[in-house]
Image (tube, rainbow, N blue to C red; front, top):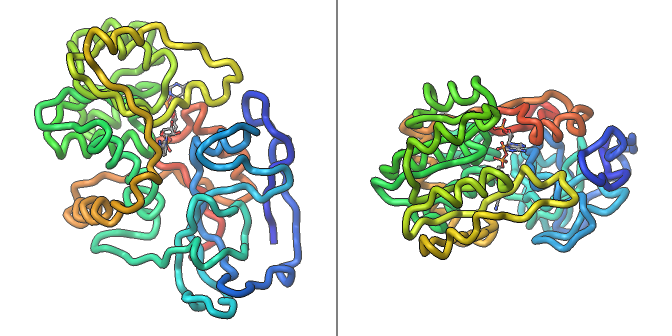
Length: 336
Ligand code: NDP
């Protein structure tokens, strides 16, 4: 079987030598006590993976050199070890902490969750609305952003996995939603399919002038950081909230610039707050049930950008940093 591992830590952008692959005998994978051997079908590619490649303190330890690349995935149990609660044929999602850039893996039973399909859901939804992107959008917007009906909500990275769901949850909660994304195609999709009031292409040099016509905002859901965040700091209403979800514009940058607009937080008595979705684990069931109800009634739009083949994962991951994806980026490793 093939596995892909971290070969060297990138200094800035991911390069062709960041990852390497190798073939290993499947017979070397034997599940022990409370472990299972799984066949991987789908992998989630996430911007956070770039951070895991740095040898720096974060919310999870860095991936080690030589270690199979970490990712969340969807897989079938091929063989269950002694004492395992899972059995052969069970389809599971593996926690994002698992090392899933591989065709087969031995994982601990406690790191797998058997998929239970709510009405209207399909397998990939467990990497989308019912998985990490959905939960991030849900808790970031509703708990950290405390969005309410009538709020002006601005979302950056809006055509991505998290952003496109934030836009839709915002609309459902009665906010007026404005989107920011790279390129005309994405803006068109956001306006016509996702249904935002207006989408702004941040690659257009005149977008900030255009944006000023919106007036001021109550919630800015930040996926990108950097210059866009700095500009949004000048567009706050009194009491505005900024859920700091991500800062993808700086993930490849070894020397991120600071913010100059932060003093607006004082004059507008505004709040900026970082969060990590895992902090809400106890509340996932309630969020999943609300998201599932929107899948069931067909009102939640989901979009996946599918890359075929494990071997293409190293080339696909950098797409997140060039904006090559619309919706959730996933890799298909094998048929379920
Ligand atoms: P996306 O599907 O949104 O993909 C990333 C997108 O970011 C790209 O498509 C691209 O879109 C945009 N982008 C890339 N580079 C830049 C740049 N320099 N400036 C502006 N936009 C850029 O990824 P996710 O939805 O999975 O993640 C979105 C954000 O949420 C990330 O920052 C991620 O780290 C964060 N996150 C945080 C979590 C938490 O718990 N706090 C959990 C999960 C995700 P475009 O074409 O529009 O530029």
